[in-house]
Length: 144
Image (cartoon, rainbow, N blue to C red; front, side, top):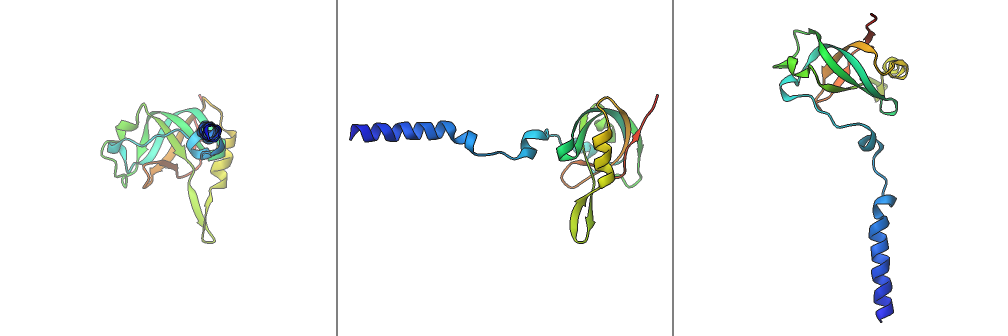
């Protein structure tokens, strides 16, 4: 009886130890850093200027260190868009609806593949309902 109890405890301990390894986590949760647009800047629609800090090709996103706001559309609902300055903003591609399905914008995906870390950009973005910034068109690379 003691041997069976010992084996049961040993098996339980081994299972508890190995369980986190056997349960895969979402790739998105592991790769994409968590960032939300500041509350006062939610609803932003306009163009941000900044520098590419990093990119995550598999997730079709990149991180932009925002240096400034190139322009803000009249339709923007942000109360204080200046809150975006200095942020390391996570910029997502825009999804389009085609044939009743949501499909990623291929030109924006190609841009993310080609852009280099350290590139200075002007990115037209809009704040979506999930407090994320999505590109509205392919960004312009600023050349100096």
